[in-house]
Image (tube, rainbow, N blue to C red; front, top):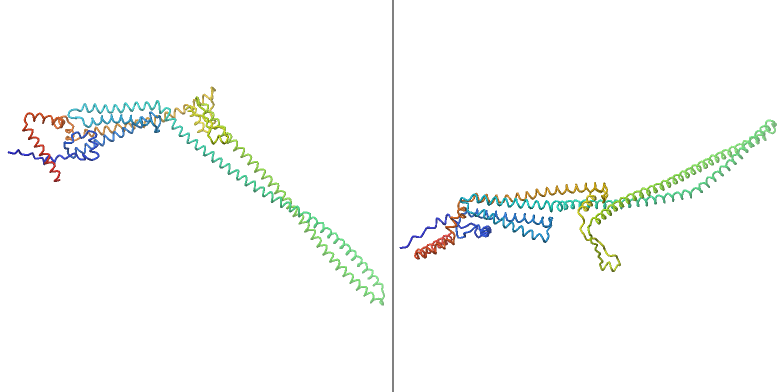
Length: 517
């Protein structure tokens, strides 16, 4: 009589294979030993919770690796640069992150049936580990990094930006000086051209002056000749009037027989009088013309004299303007030269301070084949690391555009050094406080992930809790199951054979059900 086979349909419907067992998250859960018993089935909700725990543990590992790697790199390199020693920092961060991952995996997989104190102990151990390493890291950074290197790096970057800005201002000033020099050259050229034109016009006016003088003398001579003619005409008129009076006297005393002769004499006298009057009118006209010519000559002479005075004043003003431009250009050039000399002297002083602050500098001479062919001197430079205090003083002077602080035992030097040291300490303390806050914030975020892992453990389903329980491990552990079957087969071989047949039928039924689906 055959034994009834167990009905596995209900068990197959209610208990599915682990969802995503062969997906990326399922493989990740198996790699982390969360899925301890691959042959054991879980429901869909329990499988999702297991995959969620695997994702949280992976996120915690990546975050711990990044944070610890960055912090160890900051401690070893004393900065944020990537160097060969950064590989050691990454390896140390990986070791620490792996240790933390093991602790958190144990938090997820330990038996929580009546083991709340053990769970609280593991959580407190995790929090204590984070707080302890955060305290050690922040202290080491404060003592070895933040007080010197981080503050130095921030200050050096700001000073380098200030140096670049001042170099840009110097270049702009140099370009402005070149532009002013070009403008001054153009003004000089224009003033020289105006002066040459005024001199040419003055020479032309001076060339016209003798001709105008000759015309004026000629007009004076014509006026004198006209005056002589007028005097001659006046004498002729006087003579004619005298002749007329004599003729009239003779006419009054003449007899009637001589009336015709007297009339002829009178007509002749009248004719002579009219001629003398015409000559007198002509002489007056010539005199007026001569006076007009003399007046025009005087006006031309006055005009030429005015033009000559104007050109002389223009020439003097051009010379004065040119001399003023030259004086202004010379003054500006001297001022710019003084500023450039002062800036060069300040830079030379700063370079001397840097050279003096180098302890045990090593002078290196470089002579390339090209320089040797040209017969040049070797290039000499110092290969050393400057003193950080002197370097701070140099950058502080450059930022404030003040002369370099003196070095020595004087009271002023001591005050300047103390002022500079106080400012540097304040800057470093401020930077250290900001970085310390960043570090504690980083570790505060690191504390959130264990709480999420603990929350996932507390909110796990009963099936997942039973999956990790000790009773489940004792009942369904394959090793224990094989041992029990071995001893049972030795006691009852037929019962063992029946059990194997039953297991085979269960497996076949499960495979048929999966194929039908």
